[in-house]
Image (cartoon, rainbow, N blue to C red; front, side, top):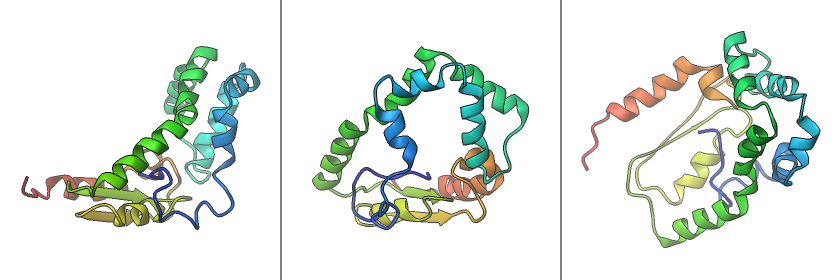
Length: 162
C-alpha cells in the first residue's frame, strides 16, 4: 500500500527525479536522530499533514505518534527501515527473479505513489487487484480509512480458492 517494491520494474516514472528526500535523510546512520532530537513533534506534524494532503489528524493520533517516536532510540528504530533498504531491495529482487506470486495480491495507491506499486506487481503477480484512492495522501489509513476499507474488505472476503 502506497509503497514501492524495491527496484522491481514498473515505478521508473515515479522515481525519475529520485526517491523522496526523506529516504536519504533517514538512511544516514545517526543523522536524522541528531537533527530531530527535541523536534520530533514538529517533524511528525509535517509528515502527518503532508501525508493527509493538508488535512492533518486528530490530536490524539498526533500525540500517539509523538509518544512513539520521541527520543534517539525511538528515532533510530523508526529510521532502521530506511537503513535496511539495500538489503530489503536485494531480497525483493531475488524473490521476484525466483518466480511469480501465486497468492491473491492487492495493491492500493494514493498520492504521491499512485499506481506505481500495481505496475511493479503486474509483472510478478498472477492474481492482482489494484486501486488508486483519489484525493488521498500517502498515509492512507489515516487520510481515507473508509475508502481503504471499501477496497480491502471485498478483496479479503472474495473467498478465492487456496
